[in-house]
Image 1 (cartoon, rainbow, N blue to C red):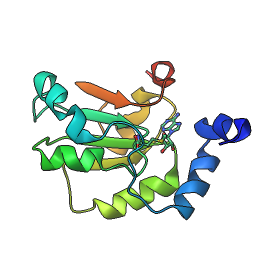
Image 2 (cartoon, protein in one colour):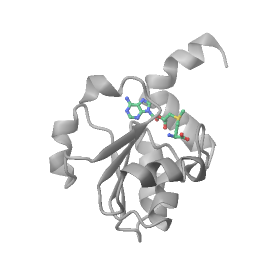
Image 3 (cartoon, rainbow, N blue to C red):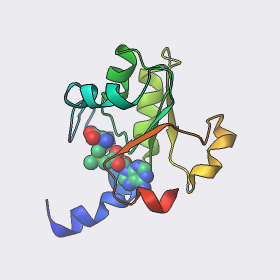
Length: 129
Ligand SMILES: C[S@@+](CC[C@H](N)C(=O)[O-])C[C@H]1O[C@@H](n2cnc3c(N)ncnc32)[C@H](O)[C@@H]1O
């Protein structure tokens, strides 16, 4: 990975291009089974979770399989969100939506702005809230 490429990690065009070429799924960092015991300690199955920068990871899918009922996947790449919407169209417990500039503007998408737990690998997330 060159410096220029890693600088593009925050850019939608970079991820759009990448997700057009690479059909997932792929989990970059921690996989759900590794974090499940920790999550179970703090988050009840009915509590709403937001996964920011979901990519084509199966983290949310695994959570739903494990009994979580209200998981929202969000990503800056419209390409991956379209892929994820198709993949999970029959899973109402797992919504997939395009990233919006501010968490308060999620309402028009029919998605709440209140979350019990937010999970992200994106260090910029605090600026968004
Ligand atoms: C390294 S991938 C990680 C994907 C997944 N979370 C995983 O762990 O496998 C980073 C993801 O964050 C998304 N992303 C980058 N900047 C973002 C932002 N400002 N808001 C939401 N998603 C963003 C990218 O489109 C990409 O899908």
